[in-house]
Length: 404
Image (cartoon, rainbow, N blue to C red; front, top):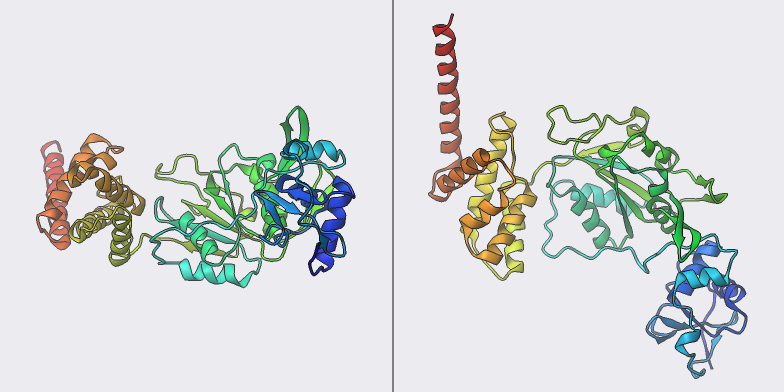
């Protein structure tokens, strides 16, 4: 017989577990732990899921309220162990339902991540553990989502991601009833999960949402929410915060680049104290990102990396001046170096990764890369493009004069 030091939180869990599973229980498995926590709205019991109490994989010794537990107890037959949350629910019909929950929502670190831009600012907000919603906006593929995830990873903070679409509604976000093994049970949505765990809630691509997302108004105020379907209140655990990412500022996309984005309700947007504009990284930072990606495939080619970044820089400058309709994102550059890691052919890798563009754009981008690869500077390329644009304007003027 062994004894562990108990406190009020541990005693509360032990008493709840025995009341739900039986007073004579000496062991408990993961689904049973989750069911007890959810039914009694208790905080996570990480103290129990340690080597000290582990009997076998996923099975733990359950101490008494005074801390005693017997490590020499007879092995419980596998058939007698509850192996699913559905079975736990069947044992405890008073439980409203159980979400399929992980032991931890702390994301893994991204190998080779390079902090840049708004990383430190977002990190300060998350580290403060204050409720201070952020709205992060910027063009696609510039690392908005990865930045939030990596901040949580480095700060050892739990992170719950909700991918928003035009179809997303209250049931998807807050929770609803699901059919599980022939029974209707309640499942928490990502918002409720994050609130209960004191996690960072990421509303990804939030500008794709319809007005159904207005159900989050109290959440964005830091208030408790009432789950009317099951008659329960959910209170935000300290540390809970909301970060939204979007390609627009909630005003829709006039140029048609982000089809499906919507003009969002002003009162919804007003509940975000800060809007963070995420641009593409500087050339030096982008080079570091690509060097790290190549290193994952045990490759080093600094000249290729430098040329890719210059090439993308010219395309972006031309895009913002209205000269082209497509842009090369940081994500697209990562795709290219990963393709190079597989095929070991630079032009093939570039061509494959930009084939999503129309043939004319793809061919012009490939031609531009050959110029960069041959040593032509960014300034020279931009000067040539401006000269070409001016010639085209002159030609248009001549045509107008011919027909005047």
